[in-house]
Image (cartoon, rainbow, N blue to C red):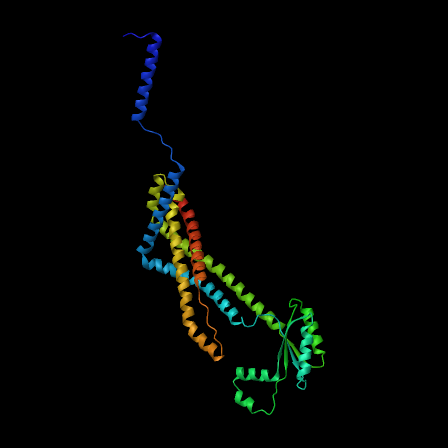
Length: 341
């Protein structure tokens, strides 16, 4: 059968297109990698590196434990100081830290006059609270606190005067506090006035000093933790130098090579934070008995507060972050210097 010239040209073009299509199907195919495939591959590699880092961590238990223990000691020192400050604040929690004015009255003052004077002070705008302590109540409290009950029982008369405990309303203005003290001293019933503002200021300054010492020690020892991790990761990199060269030779990037070392630093940090918490807990358990015995001798039920869940989370999270940062600094510097031959 013969075709016309246009029809023959059309058939020829169609056969040529079919031949090219078969040729393309039998050769290499160019495919695009989607974002989902890249994300799954990234997660898979992270999971593999995390498992591999844990395996390497437990493969050398002695070296890993010693490194984690050094990190734990460095972290436990500032944490112990902070915990000590917390227990100190709990010990003085019965005293709210506000300045208090003690007004000692004349021994000859009548109780009716004293109570009238106390009511008058309660109406003063400069006074927030007034507590009256009678001579009998003061003597009973002194007997309980001193332990000299038999000696005091042999006295002919009560040597203690009545006392008014005043809570000033404006505790920030020292000039107003001194003016109030002068006003109270000028009253006829007043024998003497004692303002414990200096003790409040000393206690506040002592607490602030402890907090700043704790913060400074924490910063210095955090740098020490980072140096420990940097040196440890540097040794790991040197031991795997040839492996890193091979990975880079087949196209591995610095980020790809750095990933397992980051997980190693994370493992060291987590282990160090957990050990630091265990050291704090052990210290509190060892000291709780003597502290409770000392408190009972003062008729107190005070007990030491141990490192709870917040300390555990804070220490492990902070140590893990320091380990990760130290590993990143060490790996970024040393891996970049290793190139395939």
